[in-house]
Structures are given as structure tokens and as C-alpha cells.
Image 1 (cartoon, rainbow, N blue to C red):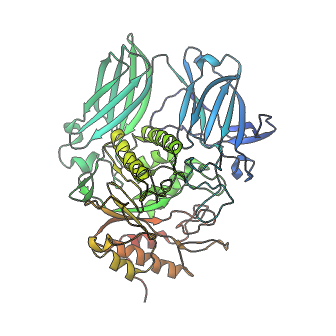
Image 2 (tube, one colour):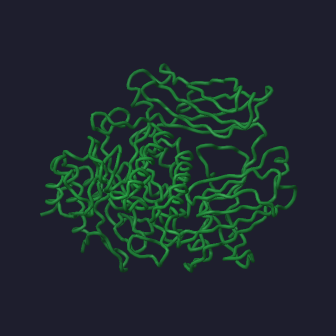
Image 3 (cartoon, rainbow, N blue to C red):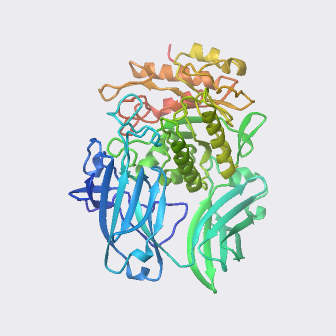
Length: 575
């Protein structure tokens, strides 16, 4: 392969010019570092696009490739970045161990400056993914042959690997917290050195809004910038500049670091002025009621599994979501690639970000799950599209949450931990059933009959009587406390367009029957006074699970205009 796969800049929230992509052909081997094969990074060996496409089980895999350091990088720090490696890995550069990482869904980096030299260098990665360990957060990745709701696993490198050159004095990280009501943006920064000056320039649609520079006596601190009302306009401020699915307005940001009068580092970023809140039991976006019409999105592709085959694949999925009349997705059992979040930011699609869960509870599970979840929140904090965090789903990893107080405390702790890191978004506890202290009561209900659904959701009182999959909506010792209610998994209507065996929660024998069934489900939710949104299962077919609105090749099964009309309450079933 001569063309570099996934060549786009992998971290669009924090952009520098000096970088190059290490995707492409690497040496590869199973089990031992003999490197008797080749693999195309960033695709896992189980996928077709990796060039291997084997589903044989291998708990340990090895990667190796060479690279040269550009001469113009000789006076800079050299960082190597990994988008994601599942599950734990150890990295060597020129046979020197430079670091290790545990957690299969988040990004990490190492400073390799002292390990590289002019001329050819070599990076070696050992990745371990023990499929028999049920305490590892893995989501839908199965330890057997794919079946039911479980799919082919992803082992090793599955997102972009890249090198970046940064100055000795550089910006390490900046968290952006916009405040719609105060018309401000707070920038919490971390720098590589103290005694430098940080300059922040904010613009909106090409118009300079603010430019401030402060002496940074310490290597971390905070700047609060007022967003000029005169330049943005006093009237209809929310409409003019706030971020929403209908108007995904973004502010552009340029960071400049100065040391001894010289500009040492420049980084490009952006943010959205967006507020998600709950008042009197109503979900508000930018202080207005916000009804969510969402799709469950598992983020799998036929030839590349969890890795999108191209950046355009993300764009296409978002375009189809919006064309069908949805305003958001619940990313399911997967911390998604930052490139997807970037396109959701700029195109206007809200996202519920969900951690991949494990299947058994233990002290080791709590330690590793909590650490990775914190990394995920940190990495994706600045994306305005994310309005909710979902650490747990359907009691996965906390199967005995109603009888084991440790597991209930764990669910509560994850909610409080998440809020301690981010107080600006909604936080779920254990979406689906047996919840503890969620901001939104999310109910999973695959009932297909409108008459049943209409009766079930006729009022808040009738809704709270429902037992999802035979389980109580709240875990023992916890109760409803006035939260907004949404159906966060529903539908799952099977319609086979590829003449293959598969399944769904409900079968449709024809396209017309599908439309009637889909209308029955969605209209019952739209008409319910108790619900503030729904999440239909699902965006695409995934392997044997064929209840998507798109095929496994991410192409529409149905007329997008009809789906949109149903979602908008404008479609009448034919007699």
C-alpha cells in the first residue's frame, strides 16, 4: 500500500504544523517478536483492511517499523502519539523502553527525544489483549465467535500513530469551559515551563473577538476571556453564536506561547458556546427545551471493525443521521475517535459518550475502569457535541448492583467522579435499568406495539411502573427523584436487505411493514407527556445484528425522507 491510510490530522482540537503520520505498513507477528508478517496500521489484525483478516485468537501481538527524524526537528522535543491500542502495550524506540499504557479506548503519548537520533530509528510495540479476562473493559468485543449482540474483537493498534515535534517551551494542554450565561470562556492551561507568557486569540466567523496575553509565572493556571457582546451582537445572542445541532457555531482559537520575547509554540483550536442543563425536570439546550431524537451508534465497519476506513466515513454517517431527522447519537460501548467528534462539532450532532464496559466486577476492574474513564473525559472535554457522559450500561460489570452494595457504590462513585471532572454535562449512572443517581432516567424498551407503548408511557406514573428486561428501573435502595425521562434504547426492527441470516428485536417482512412498525414506536414516544427523547437502535447493521437504518456498508436501507417525516410526526401510515 503506497497511500497512507487515515492520513488526516488525528487531533483536530489541538493542531500543530510539525507532525507526520506513521500509519501504513508495519512489520508484524503473533505471540513472539519474529516479525514474519506485515500489517496495515491503524487496522486491527482481525479486520480485512489490515491485510491479515484473521479471527484466530492471539493474546499478544508485535509491531515494528522504522522512521527518520527530519533535520528541522533536531532542536525540538519529539513526541510519539497513539490514538488507541487495545488493551495494554509496551513501546520501545531503538530498543529502549520508553513507556507502557493500559486502556484500549483512549489516546496516549510518550516523549522519545532522548531515545532517537539522526538517521533511521525503530519503534516496536508489544500489545496484549487477554480475551479471557472478563474484568477488562471491552464493550461489544467478544471472546468467542461473533454472535447475538457481540462482535469480532479488536486487538492492538486501532487508531492513528503519529509523531509530533514541539518546542522546548510548549503548551501541553488547555481545557476550555464556555459559559453561555456569562458570555465567557475559561481556559485552564498546562505548560511545559514556567516563566512564559500565554496569548489566547478568539475569533468568530473570521471576526476577532478577544486577544489576551498574560504572564504565566507557573506552568499551570487559568485565563477567563469575555466574549465581546458588541462584536457578537446584543440581540438574539444565543441564536447568533451558540452551538446547537441546527446552528453548530464554533469559535476559533489560536494559542501562542512566548518565552524571552519569542513565540515558541502556536496551536490552533476551537470551542462551542453551548449549555446543557436541567431545570424543573426539563432538559434544556442553551436554556431552551431540547427534545432528543437519537440513534444508537456502535461504530463498526465491515472491513475495518472499530476503526473507520476513512475520515469521509464519519462525515457520511453524520450526514445520514441528520438527513433522517435525528439530532444526536448515543455512542454505544465505544469511546469514539476524536475525528468523529470533530465532525459532529462542526456539522451539528449531539453525542452521548459512553465507556466500553467489562463483564465481571472486581477490585482490579474498578481500578482499571476508573483510570481509563478519567482519561476519556480528559481527552474529549473540549468537544461541544458531547452533552452527556455514560460510564455504565445495563449493569455490565455490575451484574449484582441490586444485591452487592459495593457495585451500587461504584455506580454512584462514577457519577460523582465524572461530575468532579466535568460539571457542565449530564451524567448517567447505569443506563437502561437498575440505576442509582442519574441526571436522566434512561429506559431500554424494545416493545414494538404502539398500543402497548402508548399505554406504558401515558404518564410519568405509568412509566415508572415499567420493569426493563424484568429489572427495576432503580437499584435497591435508590428511587426516582424527579429526573427527566428518556427511552435510550428502543426499536431494533430487523429488515434484511442483504439476503443473509441475522436478527433484530422485531421482524419486518417488507419495507412498508417496517415503516408502520417504526412509526408505531416513534409516534408513541413523540406523543408521550412523560418522555423527553428517544434513542433508536440503531444507525447501522453490525455483523449478525441487522436492525440498522443503514446496512453494514453504511448505506441507507430506507427512504431517508420517510424516516425524517416519521421523526417529525408528519407521516401517516397508509390504510
